[in-house]
Length: 164
Image (cartoon, rainbow, N blue to C red; front, side, top):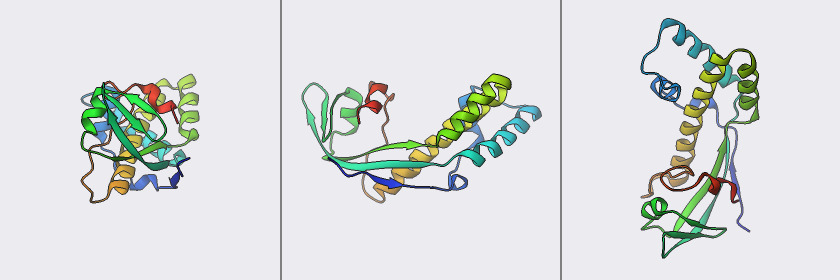
């Protein structure tokens, strides 16, 4: 069994998110004064409830034929991930969350104020990406690591996130 290590309680205010990322998740290219005010209000709400944390471990990996990657805990078939890991012998695997409170808040808003639910969801999406980048940068430091790769990228199934 691989030992999990944890990064706890990163201050969400230390995570950088750009307004353009929030707009991208909202599928909007420009805003109005009303939309900007809603985003600002939702940013306060989101930052009040999130508690970013991650678990991670380092594992050996082996690239097999037919685009199969053998990790210490599972085998995964993915051409895209094989290309990404072609020169690697080890990898960090991590899972990250902003905490259940954000999901609860979005669920509550989705019943009564759907616009707030959509904006909070977009902020959460931008924030979890920023947090994952933070975790990745923390883990790899100055090493010559490949880019971060997540289930849902390329042909790597979202089912991979449920393997461990």
